[in-house]
Length: 288
Image (cartoon, rainbow, N blue to C red; front, side, top):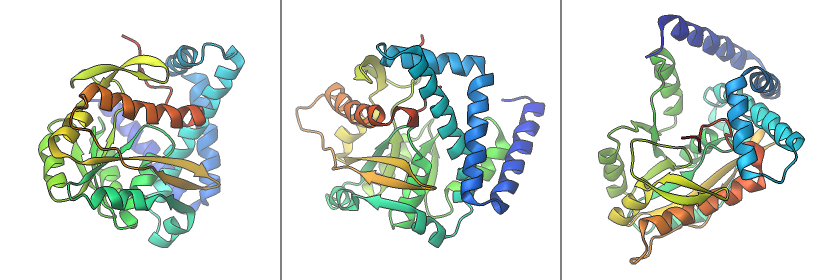
């Protein structure tokens, strides 16, 4: 649990940005967020070091200048989405529909038509939260697996925003029962598998060209339920976002959990290598 002073500081910053979100235009909020993200990259020695170490691991042939520039762009991107998310979660349905385009809904419908529910596979890439909002507005509410914030005030405030269009939050710890209930009802479950976990079974699978411990929980649940997996990527497009849904993945009867996890990692890798600055390089993904 965070100290009371840190909780209060977090609430103060949240209310400050939320107040700005209510009056600033979207482009202005995004510009402010980009600047804040760049400043964070420059002053946070620890996070900057993790990002540059990760970039060097994945792109050893890049020059230090190119890796540093990608780190700056990453900071700017995540500053943008941190600030503009408060705008999206307060926006009207018409505001969101006007600025978010969804391509590939036929793939999601095909997955759900199998009658076994489906998983939405994504990563800490682009703006996955806006992707979830847009899908719920399109008539596809999801169960979202999340780790509750250490700040209980912010957790309550943000949870209300994330669920306003019909999505449901389930804490990551003990989430299996809720996931299976949703799939049995033909529902959708969002899942991200691109971060290190010490609490779940993993296999070592290639990710961004590096052998990486990756959770196998998605593969195990797909094997149990027969649900399909639909990859989703939400990329910036002007001040809005372009949501791409890809053809569903279905596990073969003889396919191992490791092989299925490797296939999922390959799809995430392709998206990240296309737009490296949109992935969260600040995460301590490979350090032991």
